[in-house]
Length: 153
Image (cartoon, rainbow, N blue to C red; front, top):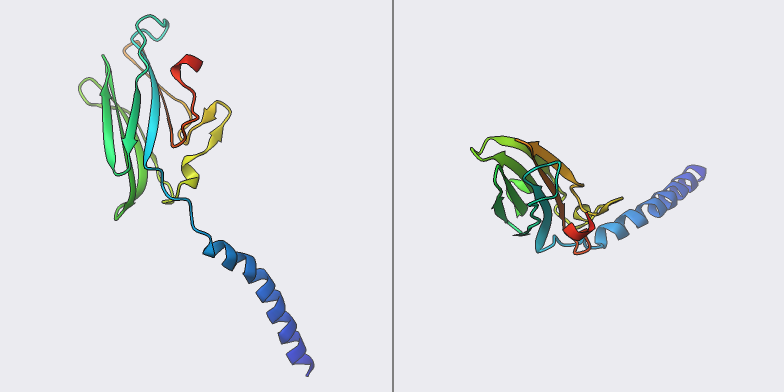
């Protein structure tokens, strides 16, 4: 009889521990955002703000966008719910298409990982700097609309 009581108590403990886990499984994960945006700042002369540009890339889910600058190009691809996985790839090349910087963000297929808060604002990439031939390209990508604009840099 005592053994059954222990088993019964153990089952109560197991049920109490499993309940929050089952409840969290029942909650739906946040869907992937329809687009991500990448704010940029390109300076032909890294030491000066003369001639700087600050275009923004908007990348729809399961596509890629490219922007060309004088000595560098930026290509960002955004994939989700694909057989080969979920990822955002940020690739910076020189004018001859040699890769200068390549970063892959593999997210879990939900929107949660694409909204990371950093000290400088909301972005899942943080702020990247790439210098090449005296020029500077800064890139920060976000799934939120509350990211810093070039006016804030």
